[in-house]
Picture 1 (tube, helix red, strand yellow):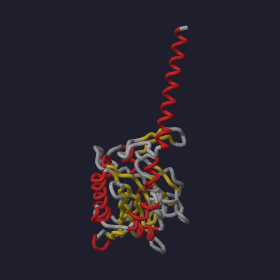
Picture 2 (tube, rainbow, N blue to C red):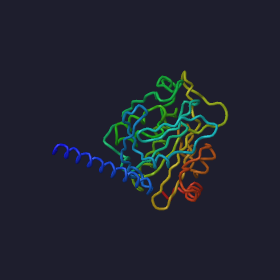
Picture 3 (tube, one colour):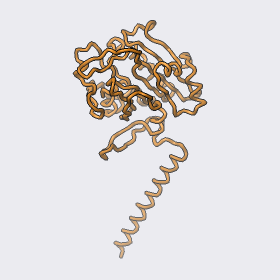
Picture 4 (cartoon, rainbow, N blue to C red):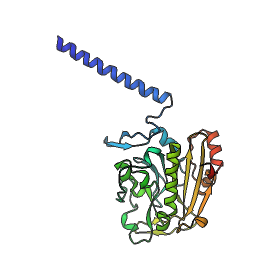
Length: 286
């Protein structure tokens, strides 16, 4: 009898804990609170096979970072540990890569892995390491390795070729790197920023590299959003050349970058905030 009572008590305890957990989850959704903190707490999700996979961005942050679905442009949307990518099967490059960069993710103990790898979650033909060898173009990160020193999975994912475009090597190590450094500075200053970047395609035929015809972008864009205090945002357009700052870097409003790329950024923002921050571009505010 005592054993049965203990079993019943245990069942009741488990039931109560499950009810509390469900209630807390429901409250979090109803109150609009993200499932993780703004400091990018690592959350565990499950992939289609039921195995554990990791993401550092709560669902609310993913929704804020993501661009609107593209029209007349192929895309496969992939979520990785610290970024979301829209991959284009025709160019073998991302359409865009988006992520939240928090102050806590601007540094870390991990060293750069440099383990570029083919992305098996996109169909063939796709970009391979062989496509880049001897091409004269570097493998340019969109979400940089420097933003992912805080977690081994995040660092590994940053070297997936869905996060990479053919990029001028001097631009990669020079002007593009300095923009990435500025973004980390702003993340530390404001606690978090939201970044979307990717290739810019001009009209006409594009140069390609390798057997899989990976397209070479004519330029790159990056848009940065800050919601701390008075919301603000601005964008860059950078030519895919050696990266002479006076000639190759252009500050733009997000609206201007949208007109150039055809991509609608930050559609999850309330319309009044989106319209205001995307129309303005004042680098001195940062």
